[in-house]
Image (cartoon, rainbow, N blue to C red; front, top):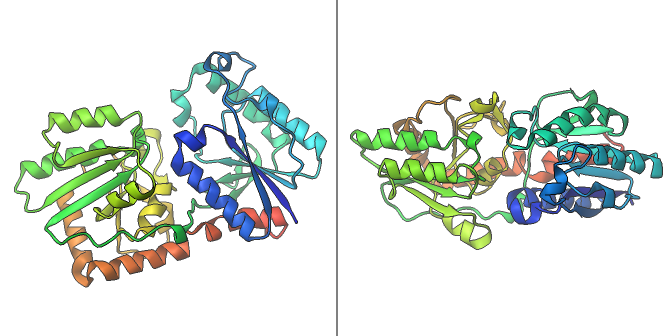
Length: 362
């Protein structure tokens, strides 16, 4: 039986529950394909120790050398200790296939929030990856990254474990939901600006925006809501998982993607939240191109402008009303069927499994 070791930062379990679920789903897909898996979590270094030029974000020096047939690593900022870890791994088991997942590429804009030394280290040591990394998993369209051949995949989730959102009690309200870590590139200020404009006119419907999650943009968004007097229209729930999250989904009508990718010069998203919205049977709006809809004729998806303009809420209302012509249950069923075919992890992670087993066509 082939063996796969999956390496992540230990902080992901407590700080990034959505990413943690994605990792568990990927491991499940590998196990269902007959691969023995184990997950190794590397501790963070104390913040003071991370600041030294030859240091790193994680304790790579304490990581045990894997004896597996394949090693899958979720990207952390590159550093000398990380390169040494890869070097020792290849020396310890020359035939091991080393796969590196880079969730966002290009990512230089995204890591601007990190300190200068960490960013500088990354730019130096990523030049050595080609010596030790066999494939890079990417959600972009790149054939090569840092001179290394890629495995192009889409984000996926275990659709079978996600319950359909219940049919909300009938009224004239429309509830938008955002489940996210509230980063600047989510651009939810555009929705809030849109609601301000909508309610400044002759609003015929009540539209509410349910925000689930916390992050760097949270206080700025709350301040914006208060300044516009929208406290009863934009509701903040903080971070939720499990049944409490499902209860909020049951009060929702439309999932919202990212509306601020223009801030980092990007126009395409492979976000996990998109997969969950679809699995829950919710139609979607987004201010960018969502990869899962490319080449698909999906009437339950509305793509809006990828710029700083306020979202046209009346356009969203009209979009939703058109979809409701066939009833919410029929709509939810169609969307769920789309999710099972296009975003289930068993399908999206298959190219990686094929590479590990030697059945890839690349």
